Length: 342
Ligand SMILES: Nc1ncnc2c1ncn2[C@@H]1O[C@H](COP(=O)(O)OP(=O)(O)OP(=O)(O)O)[C@@H](O)[C@H]1O
Ligand SMILES: [Mg+2]
Image (cartoon, rainbow, N blue to C red; front, side, top):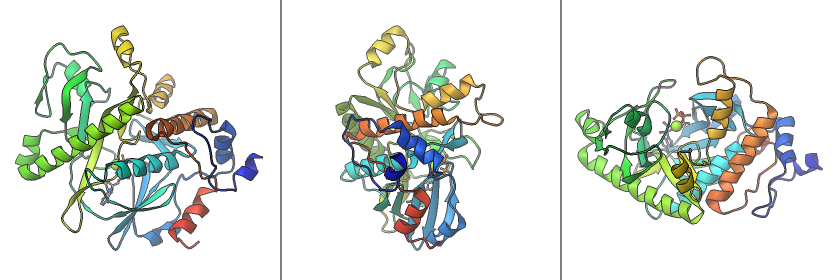
């Protein structure tokens, strides 16, 4: 049954009906996931591989293929079935929803796992927007606040705030992208301008666009019972001069979501809010003694299936649409859809 299903392409589903576990297990068993893309994909252009996505640039077009790789603590851990489709699906969804507000790089979505985009000149700063005092990494706002810092990326923070508390307003806390393998670091508007990374005018434009898209994202998320907590945007200049959103938007790899209904309760009890992100995977890694240093543990299949179900849940919660997995083996499917000869 399952192996037959795995050759029929997209499976139609109803919202609220879980994707059967067997579908995920079958993708693992049949080696249908995208871990790496072979050299034949280089016909799409010059390759740049990040931890999760493979980018190919040629003639003003950048094709972004979202692999099934998963990373945590800045380390690639392995693959999760259908993660690439979920992430590409979420980014496509949000780009479509927000394009009236702020234009973006999308040209076409030729496959569930890939996007053709306009090659832009990236603006070399990550525009992080935060609505809450949270986070556990070395660069997060809560980590700084807990250390006693009351100025974060140029923003003053009052004393007496609690972990996970909503900020008085959404703020932009830029971060400069580290070279591959290094961690990013936080900067203020004034530093970026003084260092000549952006002009005051450009910063104002980025800030305004980011806050607008973020506020819209928070509203839409609220209508689905979610809090959009924080996110990271990247902007680039299109050949026509317009500053547009590039990269990805509001995916679980770039954003944090919490469930709205249990937020107040969690806060009053001093618990962490229930989240829709990679916390599940991080917790498991920590339970195995891994926090980013040394070799990561091998992800058991059961955990990969569980993680896949959570990614699908995220897609459906956020979009309000049923996730319809394309179950055709990914590599031959991508080759055909993107016109990559074998
Ligand atoms: N339309 C675009 N034009 C030009 N550059 C783009 C466009 N979209 C994304 N980029 C850039 O492509 C790169 C994509 O890298 P990617 O996110 O895959 O890996 P990374 O950022 O190096 O690492 P990580 O896996 O941690 O995100 C980013 O530097 C991003 O700014
Ligand atoms: Mg990136």
